[in-house]
Length: 312
Image (tube, helix red, strand yellow):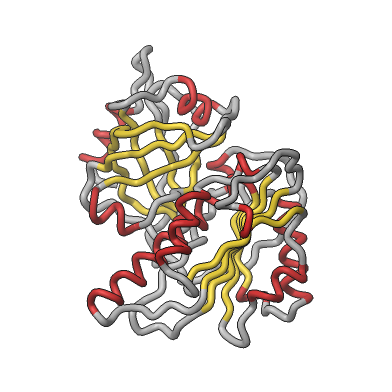
């Protein structure tokens, strides 16, 4: 960490009492692997974000950032736009940030739900944070305002970052609840890859992309209008299937053709697995991840082609 970055973070993390919330150590800046092997899924006590990710790759760059947008994504989820000050700050689709908030002793851990291309074009990134009593999430829902100052550091080995000469791959994205966040970042990155190839005639060539997204009700499906727009812009290249498990009211006509009642099943997944070169990303509650991993293994998907992010 450079002295300038540390100084910036000390200013941002100084609370009303003048005390400084000590930053955790930066992980070694070894090259981040291009794929994530499945971690052992064992039942453990709930741990703090820094404990859970202590052995996970983190960048050295810490950047001050300013809140430049706050809105309601749903009844329980707030969307936050952050203008990033450090031009060296980068991330890969699917990664998360350590969020340092002045006066809040706990460090937040939130998946980025925007694309790396947006950061490059506009200098901003986006988070979608569900209400919680956990101090960082609670601050976002109760105290975060325009021009609030924070600091960010990128981490995570769950990402999709194909290089121009890599062979085409078919993506199967499977999300539960707010687990959509890193997968939506990947979906937006796929859209950027399609646009770059369409305009320049080169760059990475994507295979088929299918998203399965499950929530209790349609109102809890985040980014649904944006996802429908992506399907409209890239017909046959991006498809989505929404699943609801406790829907009691009518679903809007625009969404209804893509809606299924009930959990994501093995029969659903087999329809979207291509003959070769499938890569599966899963993010959601641990029981869902365990069930989906087993379904994919039953369908003969190799374990090294199944990647997941487990947050709670």
